[in-house]
Length: 620
Image 1 (cartoon, rainbow, N blue to C red):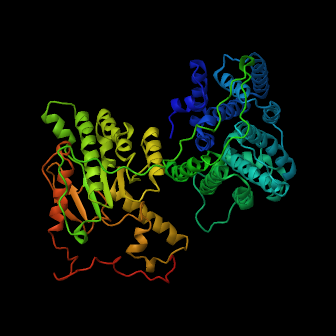
Image 2: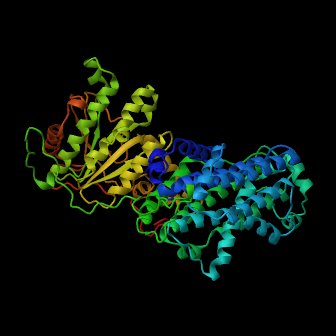
Image 3: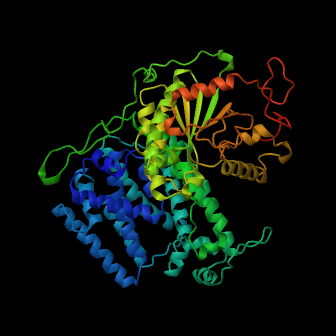
């Protein structure tokens, strides 16, 4: 998925001042820690800079409205919006956020009335407006949020995608927007109270026998920890619980999502899933919301957004622009960037056969029933190979990339179904930064992409998102998406992977399911445990091969490799090629695999384990 520079190219932004301005917007919304940045990442690259500009302008004005004395805030707010309208007439600005927003408005020919309405609603915050009823609060919520949504809809229309919304779904849309507003209000409760603001409906305070003064007092005296389980909720905790429950109810709008085009339904569902996650954190924080804003766990957030990016990437391909906008810059009629031609088309040609070995060597012939189904490889020895030659260790990793390419083609050549390569372990973060970069170059420098591009190879990734650079994450997601329909060799890359971490996370997932009553702990079995692993459908490893002379498995796939045959070779990875893979397979085919049974004909592989899974047990 595109890096910022390629996104600029997709949006036809090449002026250095505009690139700088849009980058400032992107940085601002990313640092703010909200969901706007990730939501923009679900949109086509050509539209992302415009969304960065719109979101960043909203963030700037929110910050002005929330900081300092009301008189000073009002003056700063009015100065910023007045300057924007003057900049819009001139077509440029000295302020980077306004410069990007001006360029977006003029390039896509967006109406200004929606922004003006959003500006006016945000300006009302400065004067400390309260909302006596739910209706008054909802009217304000719609004025702020719907105005910004309208800008997004206008942007899509300018790109040729119109969003007709049937009248019967308007109420569902309003409720969904209100749910997001409740979540925002709860997350910002501590900050609002510090500024003397109450953003929720006053009537709900009255329902809980609370006043604004009561909330302010509770904020000063709120306990540092939540009440123990079973304790009676305080009125403030009951208030938070009721608002969270109302938001959960309004978030669920399946009919509304079915009304949307598929790509936008993916975006709306991702925002909804993140909304649920935000509510989980709000409820866990409880009365401490009066003191601090809850933070979303990064891993859980990525588990929502990474699959959504894959789905959105596919869905956008099926949308054809109708009426692309025209630029108004300098009175020209040059076209603004559109969706057409900006999304990569899927490959339709037949996969190429594997490249032969440079020596012309052909693989041995083995009985088909003796071949391993799944080979896992610890690619060890890169650093020592380089040191022996007086080279930096990074050169060893670079040379190892070429060995990887040849071994993958050797696996494809013999019809291997699954090949797993241990490319980067969680323990590798202890190495020097330049060596970490060298290890990640396997993905970052397109070595994997070049290997699989034209061949019947499906790429999968096992590992944690924590700590991985954004560009590496995006490349892995793109590789998984781009090869997901292939049926030949499945190449699993273990990157930022740790076997004990995988087992710990699976156990934690099972524990949560048991605590929630979804499974009976008495019925937990091996098959149920395996279903909670990161890649539950990955078959067991038949052959685990390690190069480089060491004799250990180094935390690679401990669950899947429990019955694996082990093969160790002294050759360091940069000196390995497909012939070494074939030798390892030959060694495997010569072994008798009994799985604990008495040696004899056709000893079966063990089943899921003891105790056996009961198909009628809870959780199945």
